[in-house]
Image (tube, rainbow, N blue to C red; front, side, top):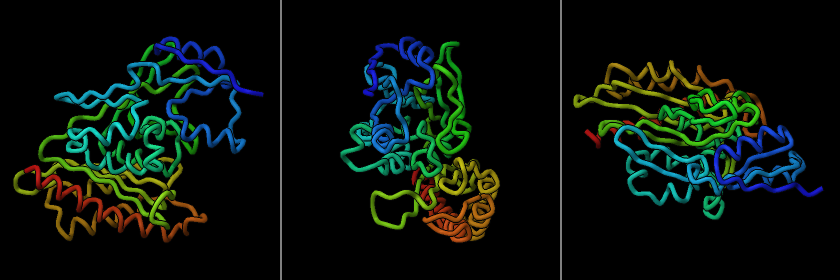
Amino acid sequence: MQAGFEQPRTIEEATALLQKHGDAARPFAGGTDLLVQMRGGMRSPDILVDLKRIPELGQLEIGSDEIVIGAACSTASLRENAELVRLLPGLLEAAELIGSEQIQGRSSIGGNLCNASPAADSVPALVANSAVCSVAGPDGRRDVPAAEFSTGPGSTVLGSGELLVSLRVPRPAPDAGDAYLRFIPRSEMDIAVVGVGVALTLDADGTCTAARVALGAVGPTVIDATTAATALLGGPIDTAALERVSEAAREAARPIDDKRGTAAYRKHVAGVLTRRTVEIAARRAAEGN
């Protein structure tokens, strides 16, 4: 049976459709995950709700205090915004890994988040940058930290009739830096064995005054590695700090044995990759100083 197709023009119309049809409806923007899942028989919605015609979901606003990224903004459009690339290079590094260049004309970090893959590339970078999700539903709007949005593989906090509207990221200070790295078996178009997002701030003396570390693909959801972030605070990003954060990341990782590697191997990679990501973020923060 062919699925029905709706194109709401407002958030209110979209949430009403989603509430009316319940689990039989599936919202989409680019559809780069959904169409593959439908072809593979993993999903068979009765109604497809196309969100691309809702203006707010496609907006990108760079303000003095925060950056607002519409849930349907394509990764290609983000990559082409020079100011966004300058402010959040780590987040853009993650966004550029969502599919091929052709796919990025349709894909979005909002969709990447909603697909709720533990190995999603953009999510560790969003968590590290303290992103907040703006969610709309029949009862109005609510905010959810990106770190709490996914509840397990393929599942999110979205309730009946709710959809992700935008992602709000605090505008980084000049002395802040972020970075994202992943390890994959092949050079391109593969799923992360481990992904690491880091954001940190250095004062004029090189002391780390704020930090956040997020680990992807080593747990059922992205891990907000607070112990790893704490290991960086109060001193310079020197060899000792890098050793501490590497060890803390290994301890925080909770991978399983699968076709991408053993749990022990992936914990080791989490430590190595975290060290490298911190070094890049620290260099960017120092350049800001």
